[in-house]
Length: 76
Image (cartoon, rainbow, N blue to C red; front, side):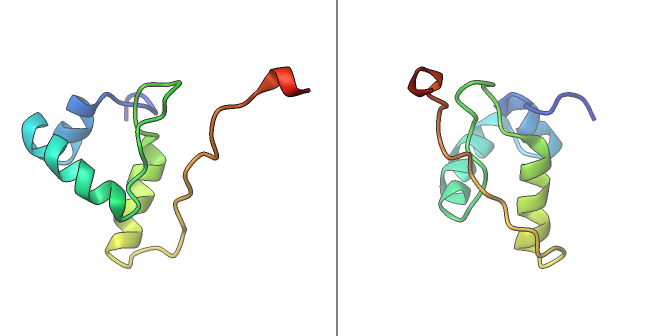
């Protein structure tokens, strides 16, 4: 495995999709719980993507949870 936050083209490749196919499918799958692109890292957290697919096919009961948002360190 290379990189925890692969770009969308790499995610598409790992899932045997073309980048164009993946762009359309990822929009629909995000509504079903596919992890979104992390705004800081610029990619999807790959272990969470794998967990999403395992849960979708009932091979795991681990819930994929989205990050709760950007940290506001000025609030400390």
